[in-house]
Length: 314
Image 1 (cartoon, rainbow, N blue to C red):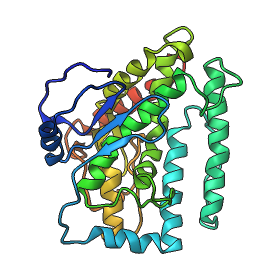
Image 2: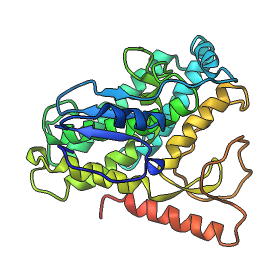
Image 3: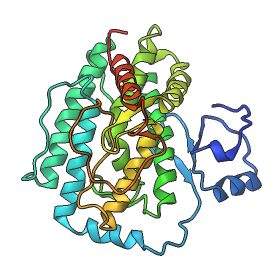
Image 4: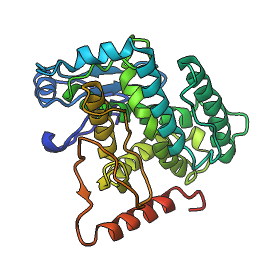
């Protein structure tokens, strides 16, 4: 952030975002980072499109990209993917909008997008209202918008890392279909935006006049880093995982759906532990799973901690 140094092992890094002034970047360092498959995002305030530097796609025996393109041309499958994304997105935003209309199987892609637009208008109106800015809008200038934009770019690097690792094209999305930006990255970020916008919200509430405070950008990013390492319970695979693993999981789920290993696209979300038949998924995330003696107790503790984090009364 505006210069400085970081010393860490690249084996523990998912992505790197350089925000603001950054001086010179040695080519050999960029090459070393990209060889590890780690995306670099260069972002500045008030710049709509960041610069993405990442390793090229590797050879893929399964030819995942061809399947991705075939599915994009199938209206039924595109609507299914878009519908699942929006359902998960609305669920993550229920901390602010508890009552919402879900997309149905009968809806066209256009209608699904219209539903999302109406939800977003209501969501951001409530978001700014609870921060004390009744007339503010998401796309207005100010440090709140800058912080949220920086947060979005930061998280996009993590999703991009897993998309390229699993041989998908980041520029060919399903909900977002234009190909002049990494549309799939933003598709797969949607189900988890609400969690991190809540994290940002709580940072804004800790300072006076956050829209004029340049320090909130760093505060939000640092809080997001901590949020990525929080333990949560996901019911799809019945595991306790870090929040970061959800981004890996959604890419794994999409890949398996495209390859025909799963009949539907199922998104790992933050859930409450409950009974019932386990869902049939052909992948696992890196984390604990049912079977350990104390698993369900730990799962309930993780869920209770998440409920406290989702409370606006903190």
